[in-house]
Length: 332
Ligand code: AHG
Ligand code: MN
Ligand code: MN
Ligand code: MN
Image (cartoon, rainbow, N blue to C red; front, side, top):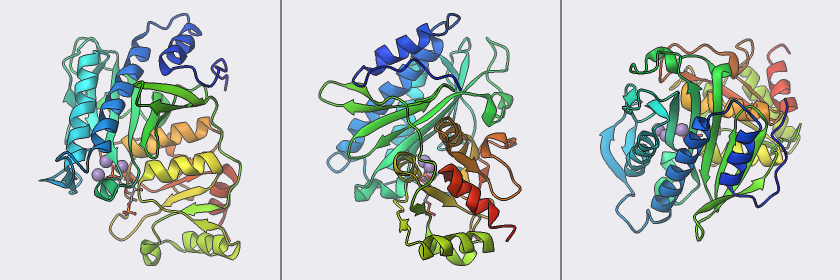
């Protein structure tokens, strides 16, 4: 797990990307440009979010997405902004979005990469001014250059991700990502329009005292999950649940903890989507020394083989020893 050269806090995302690229002599700069394009879209969405109360981007859009969810206006706005930034940037030949049924072809047929994205994560929190996010996952295409992207480009599996990360629109806007050489966190300074390196090498504590799940689903939870949560309560751990995956995940990455979205009656395969929620966050957490599992005997999230674009998976992720302990509950 060789890390990127440690770079000083305060360096800009641009310098960080250039310095990281220089470590790879064969790098041609396309991935660097793709990361810039994602950061640009993140700045634009951050601005839209910060004025959501004022501009007419709050509230429902009035349509359902392929998930059967009522799209919020900001879901649609973020979706358009990221697809436009990736189209204009030229590096992505196609995009798979939570908000789109099928592959969105950008027209960049020479683009080497495809991007799976959750443009706005935590939609239920948009209108109540609670932190929300964007999650992205990048693959090198396997279909021939010059031809349109295919399903196979997006169904390569978690271990084939080239890069992954998220943007958290919280008390500050942060970009956190990995290219497989450690995890770096950048904080956005809107007055300068720049992301600055604030967390050079993010590592999740090996344990923690926070559990994050929607206990409203308690009566649907499998026995082993209820046993684990009961043990957390006996230990007087803290229950912290924002209801935005990115916000809960990021907090636990920083201070330690475990996030659980087990199977429920409504979502027997779990609620979170594999391609643009669980895979990217599993990549980041493993690079940060943590763990992401689909459940006892189901293996690491990163090793799951996807078959459908919008398929769901249970997700248990966070501090290594907490996830390990949860999985061990099944045998007791
Ligand atoms: P999205 O807003 O992208 O559809 O994702 C929502 C997800 C995730 O952000 C969050 O952790 C989870 O749904 C919350 O689900 P519940 O409301 O069922 O707890
Ligand atoms: Mn989401
Ligand atoms: Mn979403
Ligand atoms: Mn959604």
